[in-house]
Length: 306
Image (cartoon, rainbow, N blue to C red):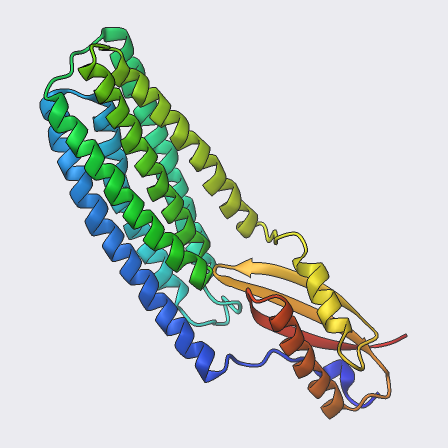
């Protein structure tokens, strides 16, 4: 074989894709900034009314929203760090920083769950009073609307740029909308004469927080331990072996932050020349990218058929 063993393809990103990366990061930063401003305003309004009226459900929701502002900062730092280029010590780059930042989001979710649960149980047993119910209901409604708008925006951007961290942050904001709704329902119950409704609403909010916390944490851990979606490897194998000159292929895939890296070992005729192997590799890369749209990097290594 004339050089096939030495041929390995992993072409640099074309200018169009580099430009897309820059635009994606700009959209991500804008989504985080808008989220922080919106949730910060909603959280401060809820906090003021909760302190005034003594609503534990609204207080838990306010603390949760304000915690989101800090997690937005964590996500922003993760996105900034992930921009660093590969180096001798980090040959694959820094994109996993986004997943580590996502763990910071997950931690904030679990801390919020613990705090909301504690406050709710405490009020349930001491039977504290709740006042200024009308203002509390209005503040909770602001929380519902604000979180829904922010969650939809971040989810749309996160899915488009394939950022697991931004999607996790969007799920967190969606949770906050349910949290605000639970606080509002509890206050409506208090207005109806059920003094225990506020504490019960706090417990329901805690349950929502734990559910989404589990989903967010499990997804981020899957990324960190190199798990990929079912069917990705099989689809890439079919695409690679459909290229003329490839007898069969071995495929591995892993997530690196927002980048799905697909490595293809294609078995070709031992007599294949180096230039032909490279041409086959480019065809394989194109076929795999078309079959697996989320694949941002495809690396081709030809192997001689024994």
